[in-house]
Amino acid sequence: MKKHADKWRVSYQRTIEYDVVRSPNLFDFENTALLYPGVAENNRRFVVIDDVVEKYYADDIRNFFKQHGVEAKIVVFPSTEENKTLESYLYFVQELDAFPIHRRDEPIIAIGGGVLTDVISFVASSYRRSVPHIKVPTTLMGYVDASIGIKTGINFEGHKNRLGSFEPPLKVLLDKSFLKTLPKRHVLNGVYEIIKLAIIKDIELLALLEEYGKESVDAQFQNGMGDVILDRAISSMLEELEPNLYEDDLTRKVDFGHTFSYGLEIYNGSDLLHGEAVLLDIIVSLMIARDRDLLTNLELERIFKLIDDLGIILDISVLDPDVLWESLEERTCHRNGVQRVPMPDGLGNCVFLNDIELHEIQTACQALSNRVVLEYERTI
Ligand SMILES: NC(=O)c1ccc[n+]([C@@H]2O[C@H](COP(=O)([O-])OP(=O)(O)OC[C@H]3O[C@@H](n4cnc5c(N)ncnc54)[C@H](O)[C@@H]3O)[C@@H](O)[C@H]2O)c1
Image (cartoon, rainbow, N blue to C red; front, side, top):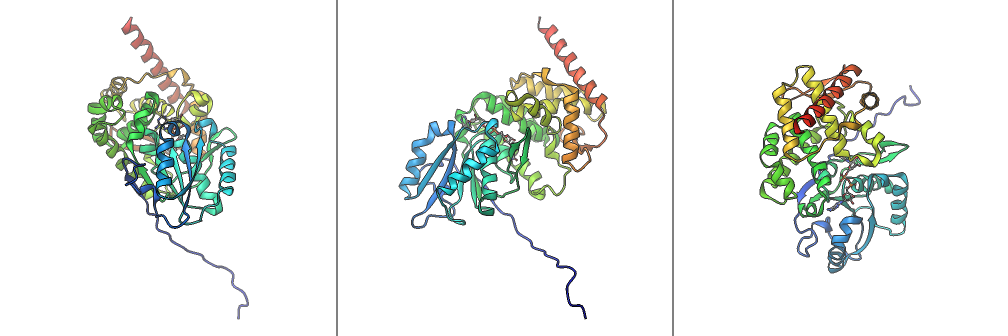
């Protein structure tokens, strides 16, 4: 008879469920969404808020918690990409230690853009091995992308999101009135992620952008059709994220625009916002797709027209084919040794390429710069 076991199989399943929910007038006394999962005696909340948002809402937030008898520690975070660091992460851990919260029923609340929600959700995922958190996006990038999934992250040693985790929030609360104060550059920054979805998987979203995109950008998405675009973008994004929350499948449509952009962001630092790098990646990808007969010239021009109509000025001077190639190699490593580059196959459809070569990137960049010269000559 055997005296010892050779193997123990551990198997455990956990359901991931959270709501992404519209919650207008977030700091009104009657709106108790922020107090989820409820308020008991002596409740506390650790609230981190973007420094710009705090300027507009500081009093409302403090009053809200005070009126509900909740002791809130409000920590203000100057959340720019340069602050998405290990130092910021450790700072929040220390602040949490100085303000002990219950491990289950006093969720951390993160109110801000993608940088803030990425950092704070990473803190939440690791503090005491995971405490609950609620995300409130205040940028368009957060609203349609960064806050609605479960990825967390901080930059490390020059690599974007090198440290991070997958951590579902308790809830994501959407109040689009935050977008009213967003600078135009940051509104467009979020629009680029919507354009990404439209090209790679959602032709109706593309049509909406063509018809109501400009009006919605001008109205900071406070208009009715802006709502329709936001709804469609969120649904479309979640449709991709939900079945693959933990990225078990590394072949992801939502990675469109996220192959060459990685290197562009690193090389250009704070001069290039995340969405701006994504848009540049998209146009390089479109040129490659056209050269492979995956897109027609008409389809290509349709996207350039949209970019024009939205008032977007493309700066292609940062497109260095060697940087783009290095970025592709890095992403290939990230995607387990296979390129898996999503490319449009006609507008609204996607294929994945695993055999892109440097000369295709060089040709694409050259064609883009020829195009800019032609445009310029046309205007003089
Ligand atoms: N986790 C994910 O799945 C995911 C997805 C996409 C992007 N991201 C990350 O998101 C980050 C970019 O997010 P972002 O574009 O929101 O940047 P951000 O968080 O830096 O915010 C942009 C700027 O807007 C300001 N701001 C925020 N809300 C405002 C408001 N309501 N009014 C006026 N100003 C406001 C901020 O202070 C900041 O200066 C990147 O680090 C990117 O890696 C993460």
